[in-house]
Length: 531
Image (tube, rainbow, N blue to C red):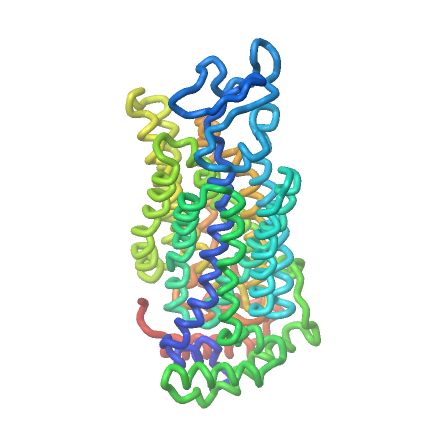
């Protein structure tokens, strides 16, 4: 019967003790640095007050400016040649006078950064499945820090834009690895906990505090370049993913990790660990012969994987479009920029416990459906407010509905990560995650232009439409609550919502089906109650 058990059963035996949660901290905390860096342009690209000035020297202040010259690109019919800025904060805008004919540069730099994130996602998914989660994660962390320090030394906006692209590759590399890496150490009922850890928000709060204390864009880049280097100390403690080791013919190392984690949790190593790991390795060899390298093409190797990949890519595109669009548009909200950013970040935190509860109470699919429904209603409510709300309260109503829409999308992002990672087998899990992250970066590239609060009709028409499509697509995907992670691509899959058992297909042997039925029955006996 040992051969019918899975790595999930071994993880249940090990338990979620202190050792595993230390691992979760070491794997996930780089997300704080990445969120800090990802949203940095919301502050570094802020447009301060400015006015066109003639050749005479003038000290500009917000309380004393020439109304006729304030944010005007022409002086007496002639294009302005010199600008005077409110220098209470040194952003890239007043560093290189990115206004008037160069006003397109800040939004374009954000899109260039997102293009870098896209590239990093694509490369990372392949590298982490080829060379391992651990080495790829730390390699991208070092690269990210180096690029931030170089960006701080930029002497032109063109150099800065190139640096933001390379910073984006580091961001994308880390984003693709962290979540799949972390859940590969956890049994089913604990996986949603990782999705709702507020580590991203910790990074955003750190960004807000840093932007307030270090209003110079260059100093901010140096801080984000140097501070995360402390995370490299985790290399000594953090092991490679035992699932990755098992499917890459490194069974001895996987068994050693199981033994070490068991001892650190005060338990005896599971007696059947060796047979389970060796069975996973045999299944890998049976499923693809001597093939040891998977590529993105394998995500389309059958209809089930192709559908899964396309749908989740669309989900991530929409989530990124809305999340980053609103985040970068915060400077357009009325009120203090730092306070607004603090509000939209802190409001995400109360949504985390209900999301965790719903994921284990109602399942992954219905949780995602409910959250997409909330975001669709909020975006549609903004459309209604444009036409029907009283003028004196319209802006405030739209502002808060927009923030609630973002809160719902952030929560659905947590739920989708859990759902998706449980649907992909280990051999292509990081590739699937990388493909979705790539689609998210396309959404991030479009975000500064599509989510434009100066064009409310376009913004909320698009947001309402795409979130509703996501809501409808959820009904085509299966539930994964308490389902063990698959490690290999072994068989054609059913599109049925009941995917705990494989579909009977001519290419699947009766013996294989019976084995899966027995394994499913045994897992049902082993699994515990939801968190």
